Amino acid sequence: MARHDACRGGVDLQRRPHGYGPVAPGNFALPTPNPYRPDFTNPDGALDWQRQLDFGFELIDAQSTGSLAACIVEPILSSGGVIDPPAGYFAALKRKCEERGMLLIVDEAQTGLCRTGSWYAFERDGIVPDILTLSKTLGAGLPLAAVITTAEIEQAAHDRGYLFFTTHVSDPLVAAVGVTVLDVLQRDGLDTRAAQAGSALRAGLLELQERHECVGDVRGRGLMQGIELVTDRATKQGADRLGSAVTARCFELGLHMNVVQLPGMGGIFRIAPPLTASDEEIRTGLDILDTAIAECVSAAV
Ligand SMILES: Cc1ncc(COP(=O)(O)O)c(C=O)c1O
Image 1 (cartoon, rainbow, N blue to C red):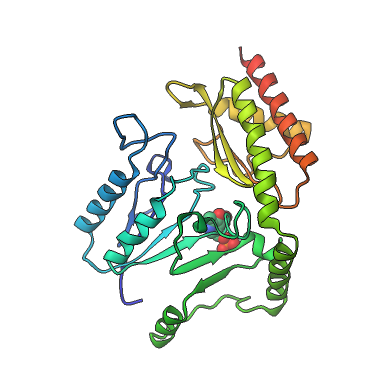
Image 2 (cartoon, rainbow, N blue to C red):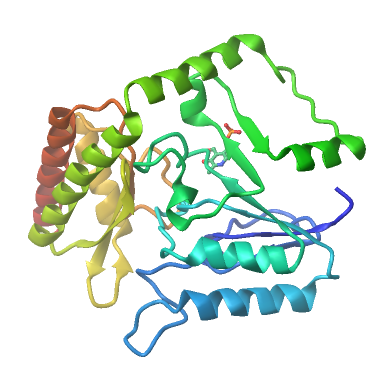
């Protein structure tokens, strides 16, 4: 693309990696609209995401040369802590992009293809991204990803000589698997199933929150849920050590939790069971989590 600058939404600056060289010039980050830990607040203490977004773009406008190309976001920050931006955020973000002639790229590698209870998580916000990226579910375990865009953008990329190669680009074998995955998702109504199973999962997690003081927050959509363990609900101090202990105990009891254990996020559990998980399997997972939390909390006292 002829334009150079880009911004990325959803980078949690407090958890940025250390020890690397400088990031590519022309990249900017927007603050994360995190309802559990609001930085810009309304008088009632709730996140004022509109003011936060305005401020983020003020900073980007001040730093950019005005040739902003695109903004890349996940509709729910998944590995970033299962942070679900408030409804309305992405419609406002799309407007900000349009005002600047930027494309909105929505990365649904984790949220796409029925996981959140709809085919795509962006649907909640009534927007259509300029570019959509998919992976994970699409290949059902095989390495397959897709970039989906409009005919106009595809044509512009083609006219400008854009090329993208990898060893397996346009591989017919995995493409056939991807087509079958799409057929099965549609045939079995797995969007509806994820919404139903997701509400059972969420209800179970909310029950755990009622019973266990250390469960500070429950968040997410459909079959992408997250809980955050804290040492104190008032200060919201993350309970990393307890999180690691609960993860280890769950594993002993037969539940593989917290597959991605990032530094500083030991107390945040990303819970994304298979779309085909049965009600009984979800109940079993919740029971194991309940037991593990209870045991680890009493062991720590
Ligand atoms: C949100 C998100 N986007 C993109 C990727 C990269 O996906 P892939 O390695 O399939 O290209 C990942 C992988 O973990 C992801 O979680």
